[in-house]
Image (cartoon, rainbow, N blue to C red; front, side, top):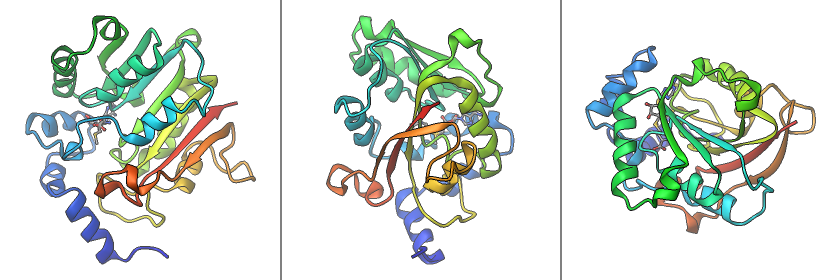
Length: 247
Ligand SMILES: C[S@@+](CC[C@H](N)C(=O)[O-])C[C@H]1O[C@@H](n2cnc3c(N)ncnc32)[C@H](O)[C@@H]1O
């Protein structure tokens, strides 16, 4: 059953208490995210400046056959802990954290220097000021893995189709896209960011239905509702992790 507006309001109030303050700084211009960072309104980090458990589970369980070497990218990487984690856990030589905000990347570089990251891992991490929607890479630099957590729900829903086209362009054939959907809520609503997200909405953004429950041009190689006991309170019942393999 779809949540009522009152339930959505109450979830947002408890999960993202300063969201209205953050939204005051955001305009249609993606550069406005830098003002959010400058004003310390990184509310999505509240209580969890760390990698989400479902990503660790996905990478460390060996359930998905990731290659031994490759290029990975985290769009909207923010403080960069997911980028650093992927460089460390996958052992790949190139993991890019891309964010449009200069202040976010200063924080990411600071995180890299001050959190005891080993020099061998740090050497694999690159943080770059980039607008995801303007990214363009030659075929040989396409990614074996892209991880999206809270980037999809940060951009206006009207840009989701472009997000999907970019993912098709940037993930190489045979490469993977990990989407940690949060908040995963079936019915659309206007409030955001963070905006709602649903599995069907990702299918739509990634190219439309393939007629068997997936998205055209992608194979689903993992689809999980993470167990509630592994999640922090705001994530319980609101996460879904899907790994898409580009055909
Ligand atoms: C909700 S935050 C999530 C940050 C990070 N993924 C995390 O979980 O901590 C969204 C991030 O996306 C960045 N961002 C927004 N629009 C962007 C764009 N068009 N290209 C690249 N980064 C963008 C913002 O600066 C912000 O750091």
